[in-house]
Image 1 (tube, one colour):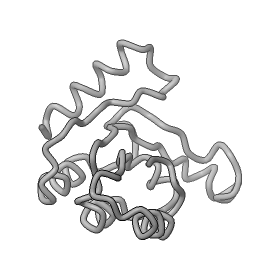
Image 2 (cartoon, helix red, strand yellow):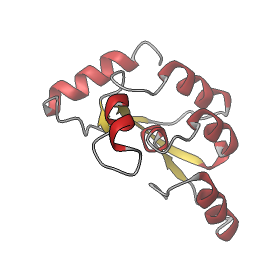
Image 3 (cartoon, rainbow, N blue to C red):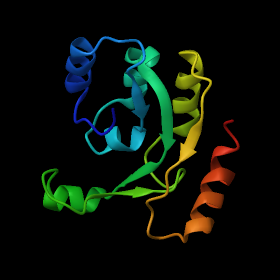
Length: 129
């Protein structure tokens, strides 16, 4: 399951479907704009993380202060390393819970071309993997 809003919804989902083969495609960028501690979420839902995306979120503080968190335009998805995700800490948390799977770069950053964005993300993330 992906893109469910809030960790309480995640908990309810896993309570309703407790099967060990039902898990998360964990994407820290979705938690950033919700103001959720994605590192704590990794530790809490660790055994449920089956896959993870490498996508970042840029928070535009000036727009957030002006528009508020219910408006659009105060955050956007960016290539890893250009946003608020603390990648070293995030990857360390994944390792700590025993995750040894794929870290897939998900490119939704309009500031980069397709190949350029993937290469920039790979260059940045290579220092942590």
